[in-house]
Image (cartoon, rainbow, N blue to C red; front, side, top):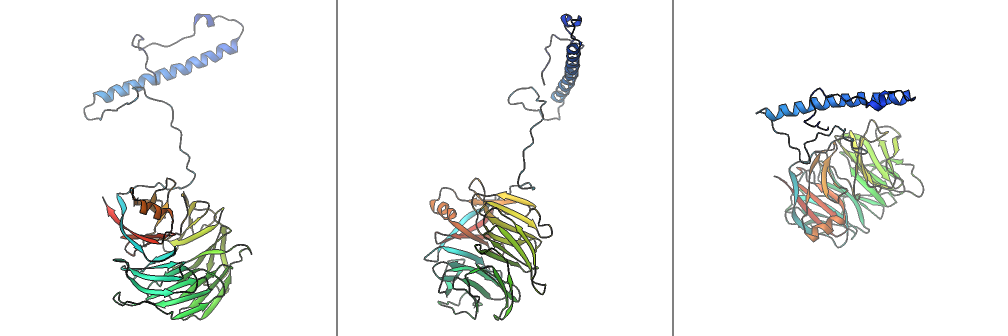
Length: 406
């Protein structure tokens, strides 16, 4: 908006110059000039009205003064809308942040999986490529149970209600361990109560209320009872050169999900007699490495090497309901309130939920150990009450982060 000089009176209306009022043979040109002058007149009137409104704001005692930092000229141009390619939800920052609590060194080699107990917040379990799994205390990192394996342990999971832990190993055997009822029991080496031979490298293991679910690199998903009795096997029909990378289940849903190196996400209904594959989508343009259920089995979160986290509605799998760009993918772990940890594009580590709301970030500061640890982080897990977040990865360290509210 441009102010009119003070010397112009309020009835100033621009008109055609005298030289253009004569007929010089170009009536079309004159008509166009008249149209331009009409538009100018309308803009001039709008200008006067806006100036009058601003003057009225300046004299009202109860109206806050409008500050113009660059000039007192009001810009009439419409702001350009920002393109929203990914998330359909607005991420709102909260006052929560996660601060360093403890650092544990539990294994001699990198940690491949991490899980917190759903029925005892004082313990957590780790799986490592040093051919062992451990159950440790959250207070000091003391080893309660040492679970020896012949090959690297790639996956583990606690039973949702019973004191059981299942592990998947590179020797093609899924093992079920009984966990001590009290943390005062100091076990050095624990033998499995049940062993399930599935014959191929185990890429994922899950525990339901009364079942064990397994997945192999070769693309076979198995269903067993808690005593190791075989119930059924399901072929995921992946390509001969592709492998299953993860398996997930949910206590609220009779559906399994498995991800593969071809970028696909498969959902299998275990209620049907032949366990027919109910959905198979190309979820990611590169290898899909992890997927987890949330919102009581109504939603699933997946991530892959295309550096995108996608949130899917189980009933509408044609397109994700939200997507987030990340800096590097890691295993997805969902908390009780559907929160999970991701590395944003600016390299910061933030906690978001399935609705796109942001719930703080990890406060790292200038600590070199924490920065290097997170650079090599591949798995995480929330405690049952979400007061502590554990991260682990290739540097052999497990770091506990505590939630704090400003």
